[in-house]
Length: 89
Image 1 (cartoon, rainbow, N blue to C red):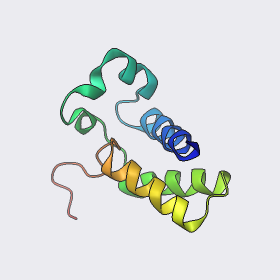
Image 2 (tube, helix red, strand yellow; image 1 turned 180 degrees about the vertical axis):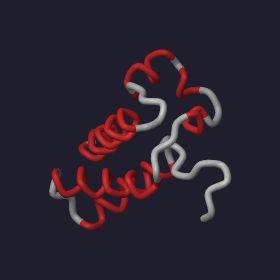
Image 3 (spheres, helix red, strand yellow; image 1 turned 90 degrees about the vertical axis):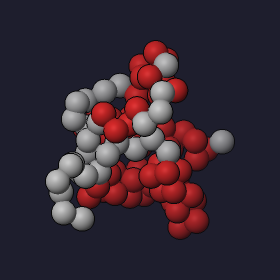
Image 4 (cartoon, rainbow, N blue to C red; image 1 turned 45 degrees about the vertical axis):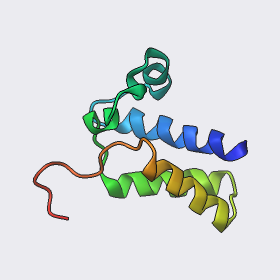
């Protein structure tokens, strides 16, 4: 499915920029992603996450519906934390 590849491209970019930086493919291969809440160990500001999603969706010329599906999959899936403890929401 085309959108799965787009979601994975987004995760690759997010985790490369996250703190700490990580290779999502290596995390998947090593089994880290099968643990509960594994993504909470990584941080990338929510604003930057949204920028990455928008950038990759535009790159692939997704329709609004496809972009929405990708966004939901990313943010309800394994995106890094977008807020640090103590951040005001």
